[in-house]
Image 1 (tube, rainbow, N blue to C red):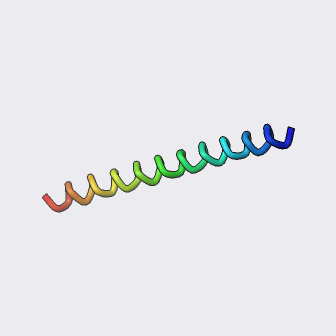
Image 2: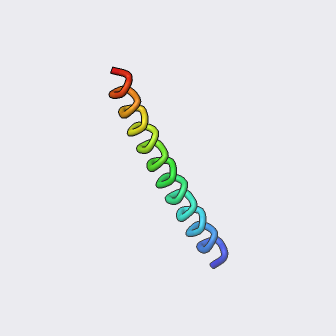
Length: 40
């Protein structure tokens, strides 16, 4: 039971980190695209 709980917590933590990384990457990409457009 404890093992199952920590595995669930681990998976939820991985999903949270992945989602945060994806949104950060998306924001950085959008900012870079906007900067590139202004530079031109």
